[in-house]
Image (cartoon, rainbow, N blue to C red; front, side, top):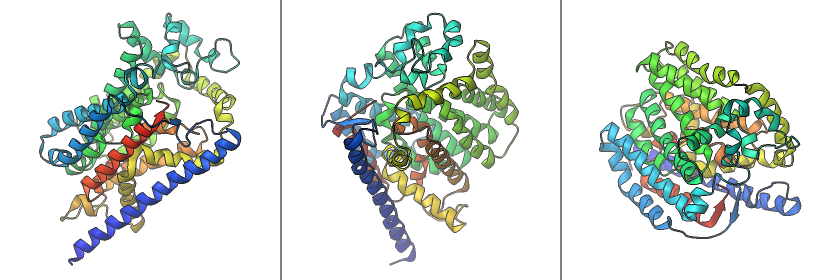
Length: 455
């Protein structure tokens, strides 16, 4: 047997070991979590480590989900290799929407889409209180604490007002209600895959982006992109990084840099925790070839803070009060000692086994201190090109910081979507592509059909 074949088989076997270890982590989190929850209920989730309940079911989206998965497995890799670049991006967006919509509709239109953002703690319940937007922003921090009069629901209180304001503005233009809100989140959320491909192509290599494309479509993360507002947040954050990647590679650096900064400013007013996107943005600047876009990016970053502050909302004050609110609620009860590692099991379920295998390859190359440059033969298999590796490892670092902070105890299957999408490009490094795609699809289908998720 040729040495190259032996090496490929050895690496594939190690990839499978990594996936198996990740599966054991998930199983341990389930078993230990169920024992803790049964003992004292302190985890505050019905099916740890996920906010979900055991409820095997099928629904209107089931046939479509199976068909989309089969089509992507069968034709995705070949189409990704031969389609022109722009049609490929449109195809990824279209296929991603088909996959996400079909998974959401497994629970039916009302439970899967229309009612997701209208529950007691969700954003749409607060829309009527924003009839006077400047007044609502001035008073926003006064209603964050649980013991405050007319306190906000958990999700409204837990985020800067940019999140709620999105749905207020949708309502103002005639797109009110849960159906339109869910459609907004899915439509924008599925563009995150396109943004990731744009960034990988700009920073690393088009062939790597093409190999990653089917994995970005069939990511298990789609279960929570349809429908949670965090899918929408993930897309805004992803386009922040993509535009910055274009800027540092010399593509309209002033315009792309400014727009990237503009979106980053918006991102941190959608979710406090997304300030950690600075880690990924910093990685992009590090591997980029130009520092010229930094000043336009900083100018763009200033827009959202200036506007919100002028209207009466102070970000730092909101965050300070939020920390108190967090420990007043479930965050003060959920045990750090469980969630600090069980959150990582949630991350495995978001990204799937193929991503675990891809990240393993990135880490191995880093550990060996080599493999950063592309060799002539099989570049997408044998090496982790430096820009791709830096991007993936920056996402890992952002996740670990969020995890260790103690401000992400549970529900990270949706909260970490903006970081998790940047782990998915590591799938470009795996061999046996169709087998891994099947694994990705099975994780998503099993999650959505065996569990009734909180989103």
